[in-house]
Image (cartoon, rainbow, N blue to C red):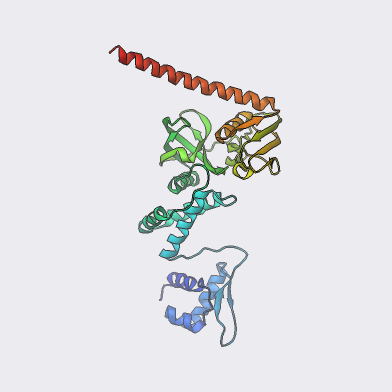
Length: 335
């Protein structure tokens, strides 16, 4: 093996196996001399790979864990296994690793050959994992969203709202965030000239347009803060919240953007949110109603007002639809 770069990659692939390699065996595998192996080992060390050498008849070279993670070399089967595992992790929204799972999956799938990407999709479709509570998201959608954010490309997609109505959206993605076992795309909606957060499980057929995104300031510290209602363009004063929720604490934790220790278990079947909030009460009202369980507000004029406003909007929407159906029915009878 005379090509130095190819030889180094082959040597690195061998060293990533959990064993010690005598210099003579590495030389035989690579078709070079022991001296060339020593020089190649030094090159890998210069690149940041922690290769250690043990002296003696039973000694040899091995790759150890270092203080930083150098690039890894994966063969085809290993790449497929890692990608499938990341797809499962991304779809489950495991606390603490959900964002990292999507970032890693996006990077890996962007460099996988087409044949391996097909294998990942086939295996991923066959693997059945018990879904957690709430809607699930297709990892294909997540990686497309994350890639558009990374590449700073405009994105078009079909979006279904809470009533099931569909609309086409043309957006400039700013980030993907996980909150309360759900994924959200934070993006600037070009047609509506406003920032929006979109639930990823309601996004269909996303595709980047290739058009680059001009710099635009997100009105929040980051996409996670935006999803949690902590926007920098709102001067929302602090308000008190005291709400009893008829569901176990473990089912609700993390879904209301609460700080640690503000969601307390009252019993095995109920929990109580007691906190001082500085976000938008309208956002919290929407999150509470989306839980799908009964709740009672004990003392919070701001949250009560937001719930009443939300109720009025929902009633108006249902009234408009009922009126439209009645008019349609009358029109049909007169034909």
